[in-house]
Every structure is written in C-alpha cells, then in structure tokens.
Image (cartoon, rainbow, N blue to C red; front, top):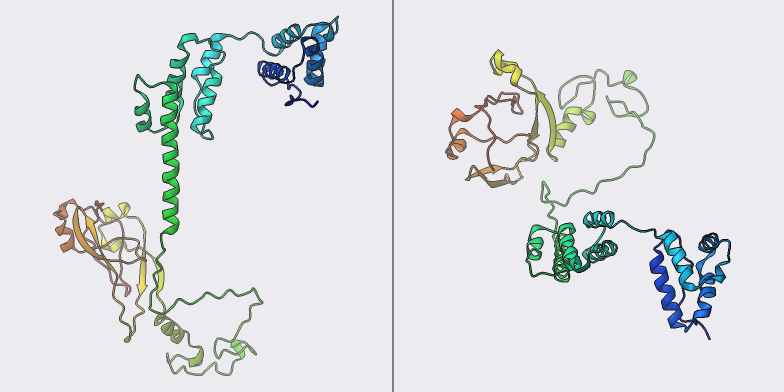
Amino acid sequence: MSNLGSTEAFIPQNDWSEYEERLEAFFIANDVPDKKKVHVTISLLGRQAYSTLRDLCLPSSPSTNTFDEICALLRNHYQPKITVVAESYKFYQTVQLETENVAEFASKVKRASAKCDFGTHLPRALRDQFVIGVKKNQATKKKMLSEDKTFEDCQKIAIADETADREAKCIENENLLATPVNKIYTNKSEPRKRQVLMPQHKQFNCYRCGSSQHGANTCKYIKSICHYCHKPGHLESVCFKKQRDEKQKKIHLVDTQMQEDSNMFEVGDIQNITTHTMYHVHSTSTANDSHENLKVTVGIQDTPITMEIDTGSSVTLFTKADFLKTLDTCDTLKTPSVFLKEYGGNKIKCIGEKVMKI
C-alpha cells in the first residue's frame, strides 16, 4: 500500500518545530506504529540532518533512542532557547514591505508573535502592531482605530481598501488608454511623411550652376548675373535667396538668437540682467492662406485675459492695458531681466516683469 502524502528531507536553516509537526501528521495519516517512528524519521531526515543526529547521540546509535528523545535532541540543537524580550522587540519592528500585500503582512505579524509569549494579551498585540505597521492612507487607519475593532476586523478593512485602490487604478489606466490624442497641423493638408534616407557617400555639386561634373572654381558661370537676386557668380536655378524665400512660403521656420543689448538699460542695472533666448517665428502665410491665430482665455490673477498661443516663444508677453485689467499697478513690476527684439531687429520696450498667478 502506498503512503499518504510525503515529507522531504529536513533543511537545517528551516524551523524544526514545523518539521516535527509534519512528521507527526505523516505518522497519523499512514498509521505508523510507535516502534517504527524512529526508523521512519531516520529515513526521512536527509543526509545532513542525520549526520548531525549521529553526533548528538554519540556514543550510542540514533536507532537506540526513542522518537521523543530524537526530537528533543534535534529541537535543542536547531532551536536553542529563545529570549522573549528579543522576540518581542522583533515583533514590534514588523512593518509591511512594498512588495507585500495586506494578507501577506497579516500572516507575517502572526508568525512574529509565535515566540513572544503574549498569553491573553495576544489578540490586542496582533491588532495594535497590524494597525501600526500596515502601509495604508490615513483614512484607512482611522477606520481601524476604533476600540471595538479586532485583529480580524482591521485585516478585513485594510484588504477591502487595498482592493478598492487596485480597481480604481485599473479603471484610471483604462481611461488613459481610451483617451484620444489630438494632432495639430499648421495647414489643412495632410502632413508629409518623413522619408528615411540610407547613409550614402556625400556628393558635392557646383553652387554656381548645380552641376556635379566640375567645381565652383572652374564653372563657366562664374561671372554670370542671377536674374532673381541680381548678384554675380551663380544662376537663378541655384540661387540661395530664391530657395530660402520659396521655403518660407511653405513652412514655419523657427530660429533662435541670443539677445544682448546693454544700451536699453542704465549701467547700474546691467549686472542684474541675464541673457535670454528669444524665438522668432517667420510668417508663412500667403495671399491665398486663411489661417487664424490660435487664442485661449487664461485666468491671470483671477482675471480672464485672451492671449495668442505661440509655441515658439520662451516668454509670456501682454500689453499694459491687459496688465491693468488684473487690478495690479506698474509700481509692483521689477526691472526687466531680458532683452527683446522683433524679427526686423527693432527693440521691444519692456515696462517690467512679474511672477503672476495663473
């Protein structure tokens, strides 16, 4: 007849009392008589544990001892007498780890109390340490602070809140995935697909006529006059100015310029002014275009102000009239810390700057 269940070899780093309980259950399940318990135990212990048992039984053999005597020897060897104070200290240091859920933490608290000898104080000690060590928000802990709550009640409250938080996060993630992404284009036509070019050897063409058969020094059009920019040395078909002007009719070009002009302020103020990057946006509208500027109403100092959206600007500008609408005064403005110029190079006079509530 085959045995019911199985018991693996004992690992010295594990708890001997747990292994002893499993041996007792194995004997009961398989009706092992008392006279065979020693031999069955020796056959199940494993090589390392049996070697230790032999040393403990010297000069006699392990088989000459009773089952209770063998268990006592191994228990005293693998589980020396504990200090209740030390075990209680470890119990009160038990907290929930980031990788543990509430159920796992509750089991850890009960396991830590096994050797503390709390006696009739055990239910309260379990509840108190669970409430202290569980990683939940203040609302959850307030529910558990009632005097009539037991350890089991607190565990149910924490598990319910943990489940609710997990489901709420799942719903939030699903909503984020379902939110459509709006694309904004600068014109009404579909955006051009970017063409990916494979690396290849760079080919230099003559900038005077565009030919790849000779260099610019030997080009016969070296003295020709361009019919577009009226400058000598190249043809209209390769005129850089013409290409640049045609390109500006099709796309938005954003370039940066470091603004440095100390003549706008008094000498004493220059040391407090920092260099700032201004973004100049070249208009691309043609006579046939009907694009309107994008505008949005922004609450500044609790006052609605309609402003134009410019994604290429690194500063926010608005007029003196709009500033006064916020019920503020110019006396509160600080000396400007940036230099501003428009695209044509003309200076933009700045009254001042201020950090405002939006």
